[in-house]
Length: 148
Image (cartoon, rainbow, N blue to C red; front, side, top):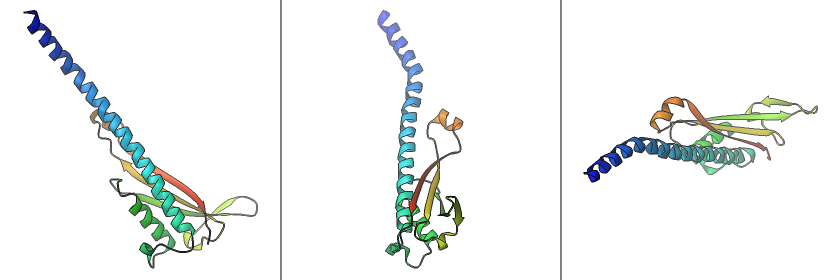
């Protein structure tokens, strides 16, 4: 008779512990997805900024403006990121006094700073944590000196 009781007790303990273990498992998976998205967006922003900082445009940007080309490369290089990727391109010119001023990206010239910011919404898959962390965004930034 004690064998049946211990089996029932083990089943009850298992039923209490499994939901907690599953939440922890999905939270670990979500953390890995978050880090992966952050690395992917940083890399896509870096590649887009590199393409925008040199004088020769890649063949995939035939006839596009600098800003359109940068946005396309940032989108194309972040292929594993679900959802919409928003890319912001800013060109900053360093003045004689050391301050910076924002100039249009079409007027970016050698020595200016090209700043690319890519961001995308992150959807949390963990059931309980997803309700607490809604509206999280992941982003990547890069600033390079224009060399054209």
